[in-house]
Length: 142
Image (tube, rainbow, N blue to C red):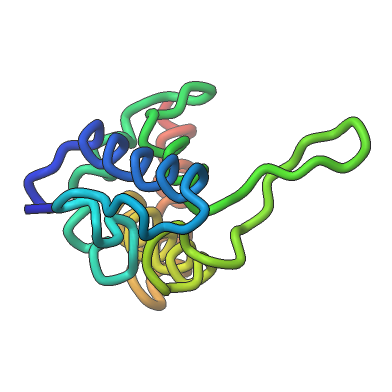
């Protein structure tokens, strides 16, 4: 089911889980309906979400696809220090038992590094060298 979701559907599911968690103190009064009762954003599900998340990589800075804002809200909580607001990694996942630091780490490695950048384990040096040499040859031909 998750592998058929597009980025907007992933964003909506994650946002609903985040809002439910943040607004429901007992978490058991009204259960979330299927398929929202289980964590959408967890290490186990990230491989199924990769295609949807990778599809957002064509959005150019400073814009960011809404799914990444929803992921940010799911994994962090807003804090205030003096006049400044900042976000801090949640100590507990909004839904499920997986620590947000595990989800964040796997999300970054699997989606950003492996899928979006096309780098695998140990491939960073070769890719950096080949991309810098192709940049040099491109610049010299211009």
